[in-house]
Each structure stands twice: as C-alpha cells, then as structure tokens.
Image 1 (spheres, helix red, strand yellow):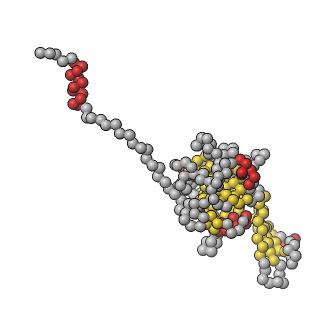
Image 2 (cartoon, one colour):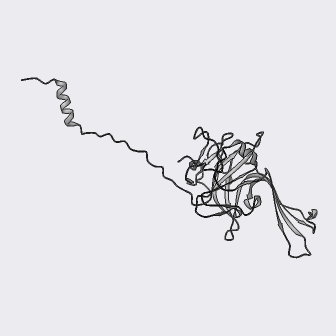
Image 3 (cartoon, helix red, strand yellow):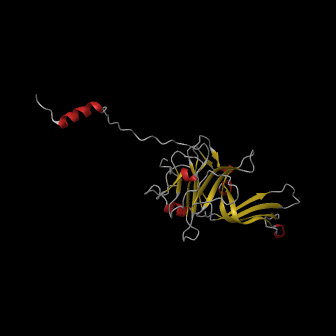
Length: 275
C-alpha cells in the first residue's frame, strides 16, 4: 500500500475542519448627518487684538427653506463698549445736559444686523458674512463664490437710532452704541433673533472657541464645549450639511489643523468636510 505523507494528511484534515471563508470588502459607513433646522454661525475668523493687522469676520448660513430677514437678528460677543441716550435740539445737535450713560465697559455686547445695513435677506442655502475689514477679508482668504450678503461694520462700530418725539414741544432723542468689533481669541458668540413675539431676544446658536470656559455661575449651555484656539490666519468652520449637535467641539473643525491643507473660505460652502 502506498503511504501518504504526514503533511498531506494534515492538509486534508484542515480542509474538512475549517469552514470556507469568503473575502468581503465593505464600504465605510456613511456619516450620520445632523443638520440644523435654523440659521447658524458657520465660520469664525479672528486675529489677536495685538496683531499688527488684526481683523475679524463671522459667517452665517441658512440651511432652511425659509428666507431670513437679517433685521431680526444680532450677534453677541465680548467687547468693550458704551451705550448712551441723549436728546437733540431742533437742529439735531446733542443737548449736553441730557446725556445718560446706560451701560459701559467690558462685557457681552451685540451688533444688530439692521444697524449695519437694513433690509438684507438671506435666502435658502445662502450665506451672510459680517466683517470689520472687507479689504483684509478679500486679501487673506479664499473668498468663495457663494451667494448672500456681505456686511462691513468698522472695527470702531457706531450705531445710532433716532427717536422722533411726537410732542413737538419736547426734544427728539438718540440711542447711541459705540463698541470695538474685534473678536477675542477666546470667547463665545451668540446668534440671537428678535421678534414681536419675543422682543427680549432668543439665542438660536452658540459657538465657543479658544478653550472658552463659562464662568458666570450656572452655564446656560452646558452641552456646548469649546473647540481649541483658532490658529493664526485660519478659522473654525462647521462640518458639511450644517452639522449641529449644539456642541462646538463636535460641530466645527479648525482649518489648516484638523483638516491639513485647508484655509478659510468665507461666503462659500466652507462646510466641505463631513463629521
């Protein structure tokens, strides 16, 4: 009888013992999108106040099918400012004795978009960018071709609201806001909406950056963690699809750092990367 080599016997036994294996290649799972259903802050850029050419800009995005009336909206951030009310005579000259300082110093201040340019709309899937230096915005970024308004508010922002007194025997009044529109390197930015139903304003979106930590007692947005420091001449940008969990550290990436080779692209689909 012909003898079978031991190693051949082992091969036969393994062939029966092991189940047949089939190589299957699986595609990576599609990311789960969590799109916002409201107007959002989409990208933020700022250079330190001590920088020789410091400037800032904030981009918003409308991921809804509704048209946004910017006259109802404002952004709030940390700055130094002063809010004053005073009366004016029939020639519009301030009456010195009537000047009342309502608020001043460092703290959270707001820029109403209607104070920059009235009547601007943001149509569905459009952007709106506000900056304190349009020339530098165009010089230092890949300014995209997306549609939507671009608003320029000077760094020393001044907003005056005139109130005509129906009583002609009494002077008219002016409400004047003067503040420094240059974002801090560590802060939170609030996007707020004012309507007739909610004249006190409603915070719709919160973005925290620069390792911001809330220090005012009970945090009103405890689930919103800050993303890291914005690198010089870079930005933080929201992930594709208006990705929104209410947590900045989850919803945003830092251009040039978290996604190497990228740079700020305001007024365009800067949400180029999926979470």
